[in-house]
Length: 530
Image (cartoon, rainbow, N blue to C red):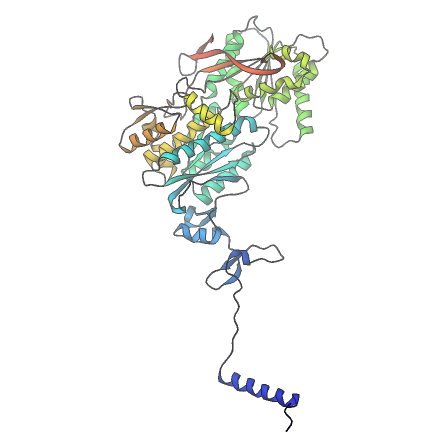
């Protein structure tokens, strides 16, 4: 017998066996499409996630479409950069405007209360505003390192960059309030943005505290006690600048005031002009507004500033006052170009607080040989923001952490604004801005227990006193935090700064405090040499 069966015969046997097997049961082969999100991808760039119950890849839903009763619902779907936010819906912590997140170490998602900041940290505001943001981070870290809120939760922080734009600030506020559901916002830094966001924060019941917005009109807002600031308003600064100009020796024969056309510049310009007229009757005083450079390209800025300078230069003023921020350097550059080779004596230049830090680099506008001459014609006026007792301990830690030795850094204002917010959350509650605002009288009680901020022990002491029911008289690192509980602001002395050569280098300037404007009432004081 043939031992090798024909192929056709063997194939018939296999077919019969297969038919018999399929007749008795169904053979189903299943394959898991994914185990983790990393297993899901497609060529179209669509974001896919792994459904861990069905083990198949699915399109990730919009966080706002996911209802949540706990944080795990959101973090399971969207990761640690998400939260169960406003209106009981998931939200990402970050957005286009809000890209920096400080998460307290070791805290689970349900053990964190998120607050936000909105500051103009992009150029041209970087040198002035980034120190404020750094100090906010330091304050939140100080708090979390030694203590927590009364219910045991820690505080997380989301930092947003407004880029100096009110519309961008509004987008950031919408994200923080409507998506994440923060009870408090630190900032904005710019007066225009504070005024633009005021209706939003008031309608939503969000606490907002600005470290640096000085426009006098902020004090008059109908804000339900929700808007505060840790800096003196421009009612003081207008008097300080006007009184300084009136005290110049020799006195001015002609004055030109150049103000940025925004809430800060215009708000400072009007009362200062009135004060100048009273202090120097009969002295010709011209005034012009220049445009806010935000949103303009460099050519547009150059043409706009050249037009303003051309109009103002004909006055041949011997004293020029700049009311603006870092853009003052460009206005000064335009003036120096117009002045060059005219034979007219170089005017004296006085700048408001927003432009004082920029004076450090003003000598870069001219040749090294002319730099000492320019320095001798520059001076600035700014709030006193370094408490004689509390500042040094804070500043040592700040300089070590951020390697920032700028003597005019606005970091104390950021630290105080953040710490006031955190202690308000301790005293009043952390679930809404109204709760935070309600605690402000307990933090600024002249008869309360004095607590000088500056180190982490002071933070712990303040927290324990508040929990025990005590009221505080807080001394900030920027100065006494004696808030006017109606206006939501403080009053502070001012400092007059000169620019002098640094370490004998005639081309490199440094800022030196030479004068103090000491208040004798809420808004008026007297200049004295230091």
